[in-house]
Image (cartoon, rainbow, N blue to C red; front, side, top):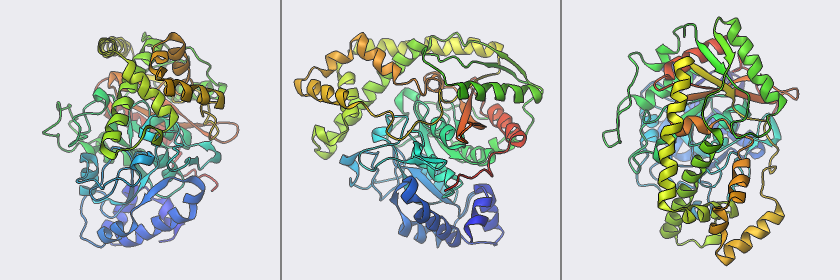
Length: 494
């Protein structure tokens, strides 16, 4: 199949071609591999090719809604039996192969997808940009001097560059929505507990994180959500409610007249770029034109406190992951990136009662958002507070790196991490992405929709956050927005 024909179809369309006998899985796979080889040197999206395993699989009898469609998974948490999971980390790059596939990967394989590689991610997924020391930066196909976002930046770049129409990712603080917004794509973060993540974990980050996909079309994301949620996980902590209709059918229903409250104010009080404001204002006008009730509103959530509570959880996760990796691999501390070691030091310095208190406040934030959703069906915000930043722009300054190394060597970095100065600096580091953590802490579904382009032609998505169980409403609204402002055929000038 020629690339132009391949790019013209989404995953649902490619699956229909395979089902109709118009093209075989092997032919689709070779087209995807050829596209990878043509553009990956410029975007660095795929860091672990799995071509031979994929070719063997494409030659077998495949069944399911995506039978024969090429697919990429993220090289973080998405274990594939027989392949290492590098997690963007030098110490794990050539680690032992996974003994079994994680539950999302198993379900994707059961749907007939042909996985032919794993995508780039920041070390342990801890940043909103994908620039790991182990693999190098992933670049935005719309402007290769800019970031593709993170932490599912490799997957977003692969979809935007036409390697695949949809790719796997996960989201613990915006890691599906941020790269989707950077790369002009659609992403839905499902609500807490809906997508199983076993068998090695019951839930990620106390339920704040979940697996999902980044796609060009809404229908692909809806059908993928059906695949990921078809059955409950018997070993999971609880079973989330599922809709009466499959998501792919619910997405085609009219969403009704929705009450949408919007805000462009940064919840942590930092600057918001005029393009981000324009993106929301344009989306608000589009919604009004479609018959929805739209007005400016405040959530009532203490955004600064939510950011601190999110970071307390983040510190602890990084500390545990780094220490666990060192035990498993025997790696020395300097095998990990400086920022990772600093966050781990902060996690080790956090006392149990402080961490418990932070987690208790998740309830406060969740109830405040629930009060908002009694008045409004959806919350509309920017996904990003500014257009995609330049590659390397968010690197820790060299003077700060030198000071941080000294503090780590003296063993006092953890004490500094408990000071107000440190907390202010770290919270300010969320200035580019202050909107996305709300949906993770509260466990609510949220989506980024690619409705805006900057004056320079860069994508800039807007975010919708819904109440508990509103995935179908979000997908239905996204379908109408996609029809009103089509984005899937837009292609970066690689």
